Amino acid sequence: MPSTAREWREIPGRYNIKGSKCPECGKVFFPKRSMCPQCRRASIGKMAEYKVEGKGTVYTYSIVYDAPAANKRMKPYAVGMIRTDDGVLLTAQIVDANLEDIKIGMRVQAVLRKIDEDGPSGVIHYGFKFAPCE
Image (cartoon, rainbow, N blue to C red; front, side, top):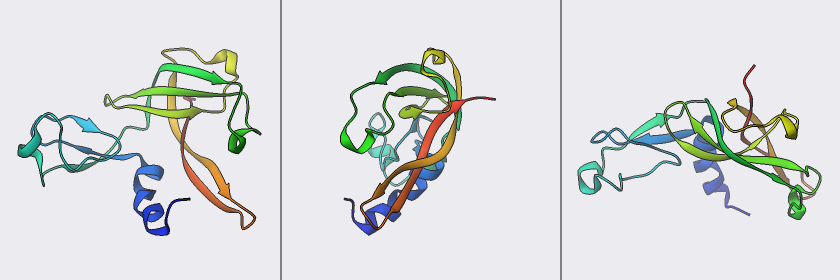
């Protein structure tokens, strides 16, 4: 279980898909980076916060039939790599779609959904998933 401090630090990226952008080469990263691996020293201390586009296309996906215990109630479910409109490639669950309707190239948008909950206290953690565009 993550520490409370770490949990709060991760909220902007988890709820708003916040990454960073290199001012030297313009490359966008998610999650945030403190330096660009291409520009190296030239980017240190200059990386700008960047809100990643919430829309994109399914780059590839997989249907999960044998899920870990934490996700056993959701199975089967789809997990995809989504290429956002600004070029970021990220992994997320695909929701609100029949599994047989999911296709490579399908337009999707980020939605805020329940990720999990902690033990008997029921503390709920939210984050982004992707659903078909309306």
